Length: 332
Image (cartoon, rainbow, N blue to C red; front, side):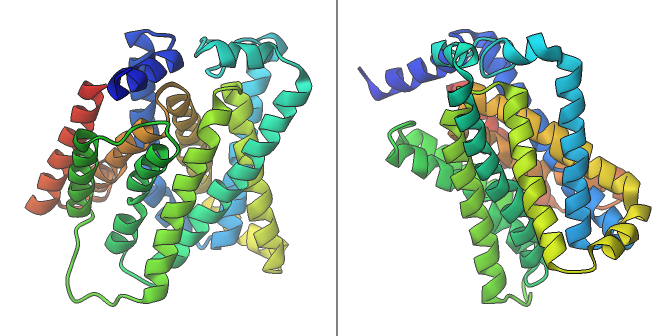
């Protein structure tokens, strides 16, 4: 069978063979990018209110855990146990089998997602924060957005998603657009440690997407999200306790509660739920490429809410990213 036919068959298996399923996946990936793009707005607001970073991250994931607990409670026991990977929509035979399977394998999958969630939601935000402290934001974000390239290479090596010339060109063009949106400047103070931290964040994010993708196909959406948030919450609670004076730091962060609730509900709760739904329907490679819309949305938030201006170079970069993502969606 031709490689493209094999790839198309895998996509049809994920989405139940229908165009509607793919559209839902694309919409979920776009919503995820939109929600993740609010990170800067809420984070800056919390820090300006005096929130300590470890305390803010711990409270952020506490809100996220509360969010998914409410979702599971509202879904009820019947809905929580029904359906496949997408919370009721059949993704494929494997997803439906897992939903009907024994509790043991499901617990095992949730344990894997919990551990991977600790990696992604624990390490990546901290690595990026440390990178921001050492190098310009534009450079840290540019290096971080190497992760879709790493995901595509990883899926090619693992034999999940062949990286043909057309796909490689789409990834390269989209990455170039993201670089322009990041608004690079000259004469900046660049430290090697900051570069390494940002690249480490990209590798961690790519590793998470590659590792969690096959497990998500066997797991109910909300269960998977709960496991991810649980892993992240444990890591950030441990980091907060390790830093000492945890109670005082938490108390100092409470005045920033509106921003922390936004981080927990939007940047974490909605974003990760949509990301997981997209991964279940589209896979890591397609989802990560659509995720490169995030810096475009971040610039739009800055213009709409903070009165920031957009340079012609940034506008060009945004257009390139949108065209690259649109081309990828059209090809699929």
